[in-house]
Image 1 (cartoon, rainbow, N blue to C red):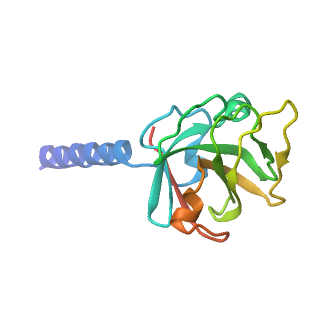
Image 2: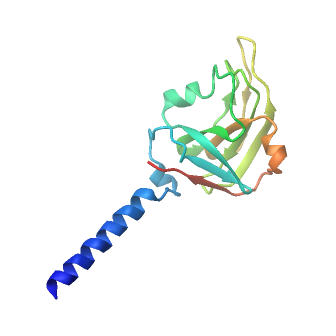
Amino acid sequence: MLKNNRKILIWILALMAFVVLISGCISDQDIGIGIEVSKQNQVCIKDNCFYVELATTPEERALGLMFREHLDPDKGMLFIFEEEGVHPFWMKNTLIPLDIIWISEDKEVVFISKNTQPCKTDICPSINPGKKAKYVLEVNEGISDKIGLTVGDKTLILCNY
């Protein structure tokens, strides 16, 4: 009897470990800092999911999508900040036009900069949302209009590691 209970316990623990390994994270506490780029990192908005690279360190956030010549339509970059705050962005050395989407700690869209054009001068203006955000999502220009994105829409941030 004890032997059977031990086998059942082992199977339950193995199943639990498997579920933990294949499941994604949803809360920002689970996202952590410095997660490797993975196809499992996604931001979903209005039934549209984007595979995202994560920019979690000051260095990664400063580089962002600079010098990229192409971004696939289903891809983007998610900037994750340690704290919610007002986070201005600029397009210095960014070669492709983008939609920039600021997202609150509650995963709600708080500001959208549509069709943000690359800056080709030495002095580039900042885009200041004037709203607090914990996350900023950069995707190809026109995506927010294509999916009907508006301020107040909820997002789902998923990642695996």
